[in-house]
Length: 353
Ligand code: PLP
Picture 1 (tube, rainbow, N blue to C red):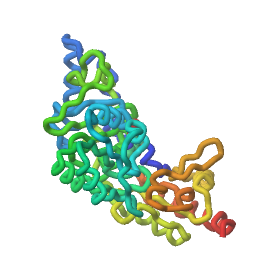
Picture 2 (picture 1 turned 180 degrees about the vertical axis):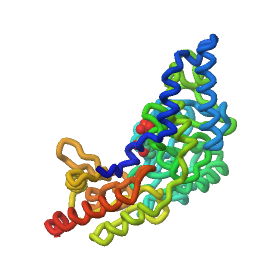
Picture 3 (picture 1 turned 135 degrees about the vertical axis):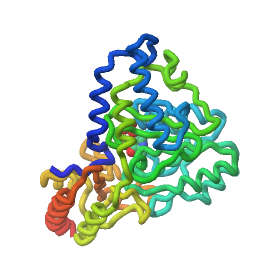
């Protein structure tokens, strides 16, 4: 089997596995004052420092969460007070659901946010802008530094969803808050973090026993957090060579690559004209290659992805699959993909023509 669905979740890194196993044996609650509690606390604070160092934040400004969804919801709830929320048109559902009343910032045909439109929106009054660093379906990288500069000029706040970018391209805290997820960079599922910028505080989304400096109630999931920190330290920016080989093979079969040139080095969004995305996913799965659809499929109906629709992809929005190479992808995975994809394109592409 070739697992090419890293943007759904990355395989666990060995460093993360070792850290999880070690932390599982710690009996103490990090909030307890006795020796076992203090031992757990040391692991928690070491993980906090490691995540802070890796992503350019102050350790006191790292709030551990259950993952990227919670980190995004927390940021929006905490930072929006009295501000209009503006979100990029291709944001993840975690952001869309946390700000259903948001104004939508348009993107161009490559999925890149329109900064002129952002400047106009910023001139209209106090705002919280939510812009993802890289898109989960296409890998398109957003101009987050330029957006941060614009936000600063206008006194607006910027929240960045860096869930798919962290560990794959160089990422440092940009703007006023940034969401991270452990399982997207090779850590275990069930941990993530919100990093807060200088001068930013956040009232808790989940109140409770005062954990995380009063910003997030609940006993921290220490094994998952320890694994997250180990994965964050181990994750190095990906090289694009394998992804480029995947794309070259797909292009030779008549596919169209969506999402522009400035993309994550592990992600390809490939439309095969005339062939439904779910049909492609099933055909590839039967051939031992696991990818996902750029379109969500429910009760037999294919709903075109909001990301590709916002990019103006038309019917191709329902005919695109996402190939996302994990950190441990090898040449053999690309060979398996190329064989399965060309067989599929020869069979289904001909039928569609
Ligand atoms: N943001 C983006 C861009 C994502 O791709 C995802 C997950 O797919 C999330 C947020 C949610 O992260 P988690 O699965 O850790 O809740």
